[in-house]
Image (cartoon, rainbow, N blue to C red; front, side, top):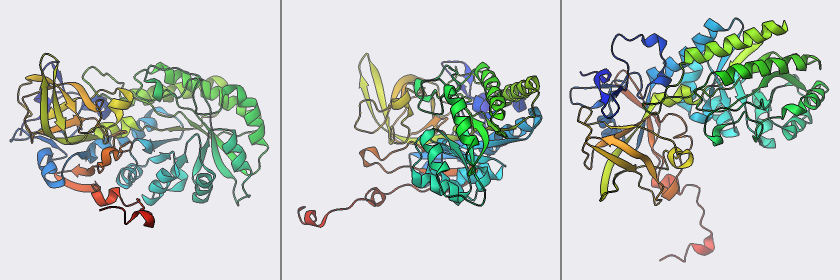
Length: 468
């Protein structure tokens, strides 16, 4: 058994994982390219969770999402335990399930004591089916339908109100035995260095009440006996490596809390969102989970002390940093094309339908050939998907050993926003996903079939006889 600790990315001199003996406790999964259990076996194959990735492809087919349970549980525990260590008051970590919503992921997060952040009726339904307690469910979204709001109220979950229409709709609902528990989402006006599509805290955002509306919003809410305004929420974006914006957010939110008290609102919770980035490439250097939690906890505590107010319950919503590093995607290499003096295209049996982030956000990933882990990097190629789109390129410049059809290509860090944003473009069935642990692989998402693709299709009777 050869440890991945010794496997280097040869054109960068950087290692995938720390050398044996490193203080692993001071680092977190979001700082690694591969899951924590990754290693190389005697066949020179990549293993995750004690399972040979090439054998997983033979058994379950490809493309295949491979989720490492140990990495997922470790991430949940690091968030949970860091808040207990650094925040003097009560805290609750919520998994932002838009990163990947399915029964197994939600159930594991809940089993580690986490709540779930949902952004649609479908995500709420999934979390409930995973038996997550409704009081640990927080329903976000900037355009919840009336049906979704009614579903949320009936389920007994917490509703994060994003705008006036939602607020007025909830206030107009028939009175229940207990008031509807809500949080107000506010826009803090804090910029951070990340892709413009995933910045949500700046003023020019579709999310949340404008801070200039605070007086009007607090006045309205204070007059609604059917609403229990239990908290305030803000989120500044995603894939963030900076800590200062989160310190700034803490100060702003405590000011809002103080202001709300002037309207008779007893705010019990502050939800500071998520946003911690992960390592997609060797050059990425995100803060650890521990460092992120420490900064936020100390900033909230200091701001409350300065205002001489009691500590609120502190909520956070990690998504990408919680599930992103837990997963790899395994593909089978197919055709190749060399354009002289320009580039070589190496094609895999998936692409933008199972990972739309490169074509959508220009996201950059790293890859290895799972059945040639110690082979020298001998070429730089473009990893192309199989879709009928010129832009279907998963990695523009991938350093790989010599490849051939049938090799297993693994793209790292694919747990966040890959399956959740997957599509059936070109009528490709969505891939299967397996959960691996201690040499055992369990199917958590079944591969779609061609029959699944037409399951919702309806052919009008007048057309049924028109085909030969």
